[in-house]
Length: 271
Image (tube, rainbow, N blue to C red; front, side):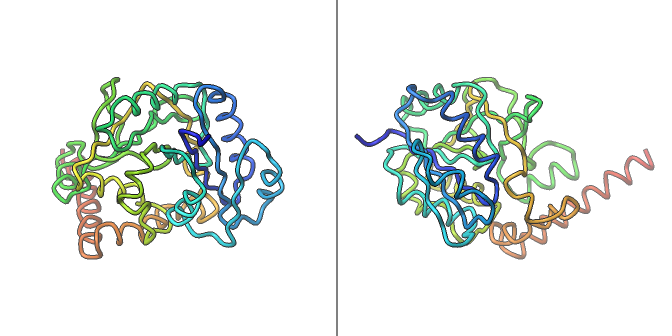
């Protein structure tokens, strides 16, 4: 019998944190959801293969190279048999079985296309994971008038809430819907794939929900830390930003952010 849920964990040189992610899934979800775990190895050169290739409780898929987030996950879905897909970053960690509540809510509300839980930092403090519409108007409102409208945020409402976009770090979506939008957009290598996917769903009139009754720990940036040193992490966003906005809008948005921050500093100096 096919599983109801395919949990897809993409990993690249993160054997130990991926092992932790898998172990927490098995600890808290076993016998509560009919699921399968697919660990997709995106061309790792560490000991990932040694850790997972003989693990009976998961399906281990080995990619020859690092295809990036979008293509790596898309390739993994070809092996998925569930009617629902849960994309779970390797740097995620379950702390309880609350994802079961999110799954059940999702299943009982067919009008919802995708849903995500609350993110927590390792110290269990809340972590922002929701995005408002990424528009020029919202960038101006936030960076010139200090009205939160553009940056990632944490909803104050503690009930399931319709939102514009959720993080792809933990994203549950119907397999049928995922195929309808042709999966993750492979023009992105790393970053902005989740914003693009949610933008597509919004354009189709599909609902995206935040479900704060479910929580997962997110070791923020652990899955991509080896791509750049700490001082240059922001540079990883540039290629995806140019693709998401288009080059003219990318530079305009960045000009608004830069000049807005300068303006706020000037206001503080002169009162």
